[in-house]
Image (cartoon, rainbow over all chains, first blue to last red; front, top):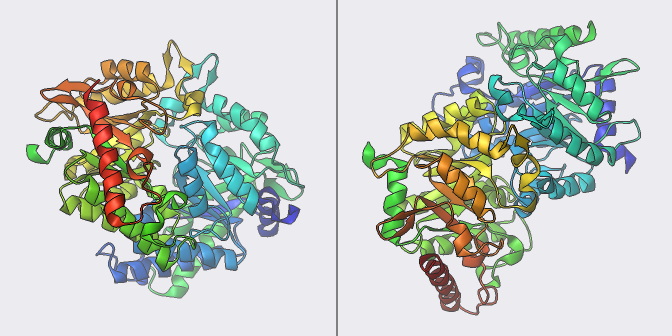
Length: 300
Length: 300
């Protein structure tokens, strides 16, 4: 049971890889290297094949070198149901390779409907298999119950959107309510739920999304949620440096832990990769990008 | 162009059907009538066939008698990628039958990713075809831009989750921020965007979700958003009566308009339908349920 706990598995993955770096896998058609094939006809078999080859190649580069991958559901959904097949196979392949899969799908609904999303997206046996799912709690804390139940039963985790990294994140999240921002009220509501789910290495299976572009907020959130894993988007292409990205993480025996620092464009679409002439050149560009991000997160 | 405007098409659909009633189509496996086949093995071909037959039969019963259908994405996703194929075909069949399709998928992400969700879910030519999509704006108003752009380009609409119908809806939505609740701040932020998108019959293509269980809130929201269509969940099985459900709607020449009152369980899982012995009996039960809800919404 304890070995199956998401927080424990996440800590072990970070220590094993030697980095809290997470590779975002977002197959933007406009950014995909020509090397992987023609993507000019969305939804077509050739485009789907190129996306599958590209995302599987990203997974191969990630294996052993990052702590987790985070596929973005939207880019697979944009290809229709067959794109969802590619996402399901990518998740399965990552699990088979021993790579943690954070499905970034930001699902949300009322309770009985969230139970269906939980079936779809949470755990290794789900149709869209994962180790953890991103979810949105605007509809209320009660809506998390069926998601938490499924996560608890399958040894999976959740990351609740709390403070995001986009410019307009503050429109609702920062509204001041009796001296605390909305996102802080949300964090306070999550605190007892996270505390009930702490694994043997001190990390909970219930975490939050806390954008790298707001390090002060991340540090405050860490006070409220001492044992929650933080999923930190916004590092690299979205503008945050390593110091900002690590602000909400904790310090383990060999470096930062307690969460994941995600990079997407910086890792899968680095300079030199788009016009790579050979698979070897592409792999070299991705490998260099991973090494550079790992190093940046180590030297803060 | 004007004929393609979602707000105008919605008003015409309500007037044509003679009711603002919307049929929610949520294929809960545990509630599906045995008549449609065996659903004991989720994701199997027999379960998928039963879901397709059931949801297509619901659409057939809806055609001409309600203003729109609202398929719930979660229940199709729970069947995996092949379930998503069923959802795509249901949407296509509804559009071909001239029935408005509100895809209830509550998608949300930052801008560049929301552009991919927009491609996936908005408009008649999307892989998951729709006339309108439900979306979640917790991440900020800036995140709506690519969704609005796609809706504007395809004559489609959006319904932004504002005040939902579940018991815990108030956890974040009702937090008081300088004298106004979070959901009211959201509505105020949406007001100029809705006002820019008013069609020739006075209804905008940008609407909100406003739960039937909170009629006072719905009336206040109508003040802030005079021309926005309201999608009202919570009527019937979720506990709200017709007077509550209609609180946020407007009065047209022949009855309530300006939004949709959704009923799911009351229409597709009414008493007597689960154990119907024949297709004729099942159709009779559904038809009676639709008539009863239409009548309830007419006599307030």
